[in-house]
Amino acid sequence: MERPRISFVIVNYNVKEYLAQLLQSMSRALEGISHEILVVDNASVDGSVAHIREHFPEVRLIASEENLGFGKANNLALEQVNGEFVVMINPDVVVQEDTFTNLLAFFEETPEAGAATCKIINPDGSFSVDCRHSIPTPAMA
Image (cartoon, rainbow, N blue to C red; front, top):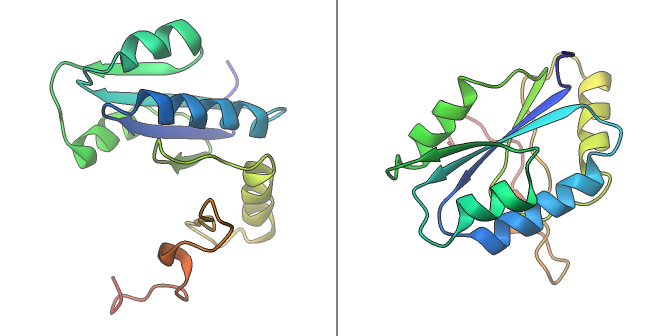
């Protein structure tokens, strides 16, 4: 099996509808890009696990019987990824069709880069407060 170009890690907790929207938008944005998607479900009670299994069988689902918390759930998935690049993405995101081709192009053009983030655009078209700052420094972190 060929190593995926991108591995995605998503932590889910009772946001089935958001997760479905994200996975649908990712499907369009990932056409022609080898990838794997890992979802850690933190013991959701909203039917998320069944929904993922039924509608997104290509997703590698880690269904936890307890809420591990965000950090531990991410770490659990990160131990299992195989991709050249790893994208950690929240389930309440909808990606544009060129998001991942742009991300890969950035890393090809900037091989010294170790990490990147995307612009976060609110539904009204404005930039999220999370991306209005310049490059973070240790003092900002």
